Image (cartoon, rainbow, N blue to C red; front, side, top):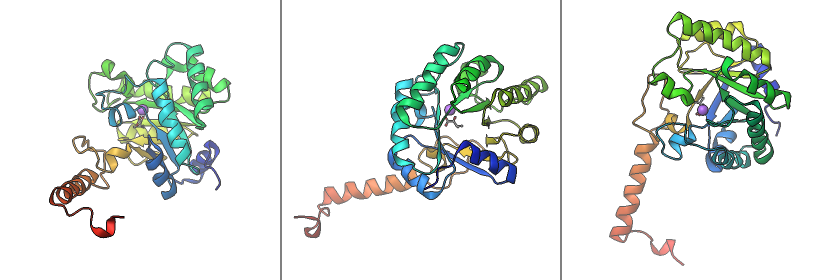
Length: 265
Ligand code: KIV
Ligand code: NA
């Protein structure tokens, strides 16, 4: 199979073909999603929430991200695999940022990393790119800064923040980032940014004009049912289906209906 690369995404934008991206954290789901034809898998630090049960993405470590990424890489032979650098592994120090990115590339076999922020982290971005490591940037609602924002509300509704986001997007493109995630910003702003850039934008809660879309796999499959923001389309209700299957299994075991003779040796 031919691997999707950062160059493939560039061509897709140029041709007006939309880019599909989902998160994955483990081998089994990565295998299903890759075989279904996804363009990009993100080993997101949302693993901190959906895999580890933390309230925010801040606690997850570089070692944890590497473990998840190794598992995803083993399951996904086709798509481009991007790994989030976790909180604390790249901000404010280009040497540390480069060391973190190199660990991801060396120890996992993934193809790119993702970082949150613009001008504040541009030195780290340049250091990492100087080593030949592709970067997907991430602006708007950047969850690693949740304690700065104070809420998960839509970002960049005011002109000052929108202007900074537009400037950051250009700065990140100039630095050599190959794509940009835009999270929870007005659709009109995402459209403007998308048109101003030659690199693809991937939206989550950023409207239909982005070059691609991303969702957290557990949310779109309905494994989490408490998290229901407007932007989230739930394609399955796995929570309900798994609950039904588990209840049926419990009943079968309790009533002696499982296993049957045919299921025994
Ligand atoms: O960690 C994550 O899942 C993400 C996506 C929501 C873009 O960063
Ligand atoms: Na993330």
